[in-house]
Length: 225
Image 1 (tube, helix red, strand yellow):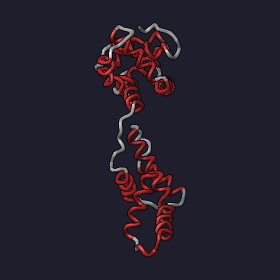
Image 2 (cartoon, helix red, strand yellow):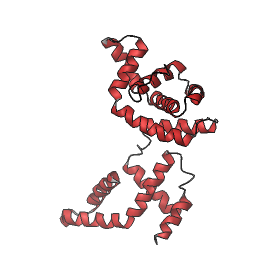
Image 3 (cartoon, rainbow, N blue to C red):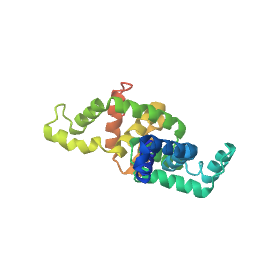
Image 4 (cartoon, one colour):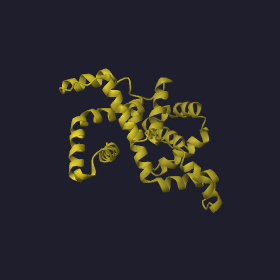
């Protein structure tokens, strides 16, 4: 929404006579924003739902019914144009990959493949562990590096070569899901790891090492290793 306001201001300023001044420009923009604020807000939610694989829940019909309940008479064409306006303001750069997106994608596949652990419980635990991993990012990755090279004092070259691992969101997502599975129910943990290995191609050893690093600095256990 902030980007959209900025772009709208620039457009309004370029189309308004300079003699009108900043006050009139802002007044014109404010009137436009007030008229379309709810529509733009709903469009942001729609776009977010599409990125989160919930497009079948928040579809155009659902959105129109919601807007009608608020006494707005928008059409499907208005919805499309509103989404397009937001996308243009963001220069279509909305599908930025994040670890959380990978976690949700993998959990959806796990649920489809018949994972024995309830996906909803996994999802909740993953959110907590993902937050923890970011808070303890340096120490967790430092532990992972030392495990992978089997040396407690890595060289500068080894540290440099390890940088791509720290930027691998898929590996992070797999590690978080694996660790969540172990915490929730160790009996089903092997199945979760096998599924993750088949889905992503990440080796079982790499999954175990990441799980060990997270567990060591969260609950203090080292069993997965």
